[in-house]
Image (cartoon, rainbow, N blue to C red; front, side, top):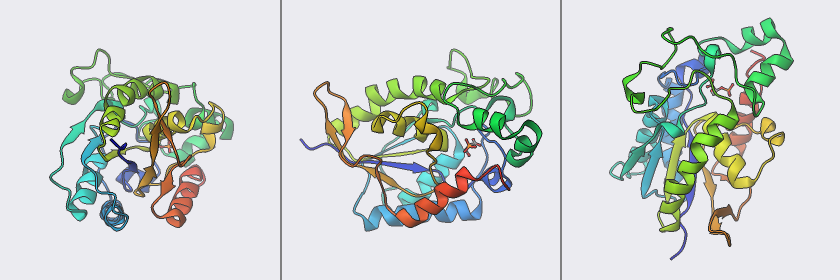
Length: 252
Ligand SMILES: O=C(O)[C@@H](CO)OP(=O)(O)O
């Protein structure tokens, strides 16, 4: 049985992406542009004959809405869907709701980049019960503990066991899988798939709304390894421009 194809899709532009605010687990909506990106992603899936058999998505509406728009456009609105908090964006702690450029101006470039892109330094924790905290959100009621902040390492720890036990099993069973998630949860997954070091992952940014295809093989130890290292964006030019825009978010 051949292995299914994996497609990763970061949600389209959200209202807080447009306002340049740290978002994390805050459940913001897509902008008009973000909705158009979702539709365009579906067109690209169709054009490249990459029709998913199953969708995995986070519990956040920007990912859910993007997937709905893409699947509708690709006439795959009917496929089974699995939603899981492990695909959520990194919890951005006390930075949630703060403007990125202002944060950089206030704390300096080094601290800003440490919080934003270091592998193992989380931002300060958010105050439980505060406006942008999720500690009382019903959708996380079953979690033993709702995070108050996370670094990328924390995301790797919650996401990779789930990838191994669930998503990769679907691929090994020959299913084409669409994973619709977030900048940092997808960075965690790409780090694992491509074997990127803790230092080098700081330089990797994922653009909104452009499908990233991975062709996979099974290694001797039974894990999945990309045949096309780094994956293949279905619109490479737009992806390069989008990734540069994400890298530059402190500047605006
Ligand atoms: O704000 C966030 O949650 C993320 C993704 O939008 O931002 P960053 O790229 O700065 O990690």
